[in-house]
Image (cartoon, rainbow, N blue to C red; front, side):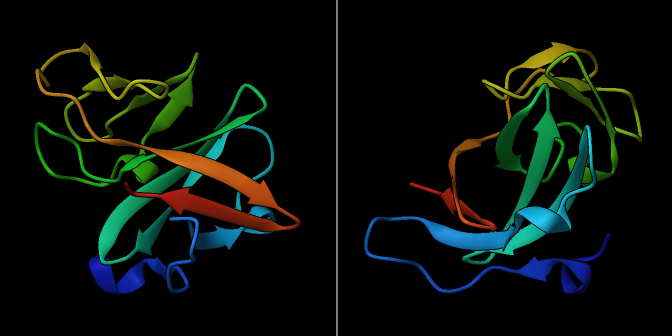
Length: 117
């Protein structure tokens, strides 16, 4: 997914959260979408009944993690198979050795909000 294809989040709010997408934009069950929040690529991921947000770029090859496979609180990069824990951003499988940033998420109504801070 190119940067131009990312869904655009709205401007920041006073509590530090920015609307990233609608909850209804996410695939049902487990899945992910790529959005742009304040100029940053962010993967919004639904897994195990929870929502997670992390930088949508594999630390090994800079490809979109939102296009990877989701399982057991893990996202697997589609290109080389690097795996990352959705809760911490830490790599759980090679070839990645560096974590990806994780962000706080909250839901208000149908809105999914992310804090990059």
